Image 1 (tube, one colour):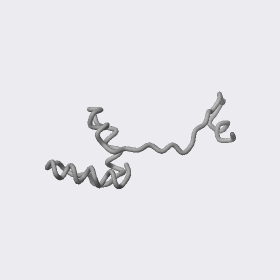
Image 2: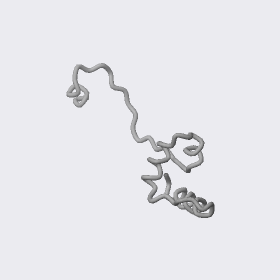
Image 3: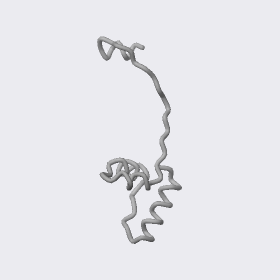
Length: 67
């Protein structure tokens, strides 16, 4: 959750009389655990993917580490 989105979310929550979130990391984690997907969709979350790859069949985790 970007810091600006976190601040905006807390300001809007305070205006509605709701509890504010403690920090962006916990806010993002808690957002993903919501049972109602509409609540998650309403939160300002971003996704950054920093790596992608394919692991083909290997006989052990040591084979994977050597690649």
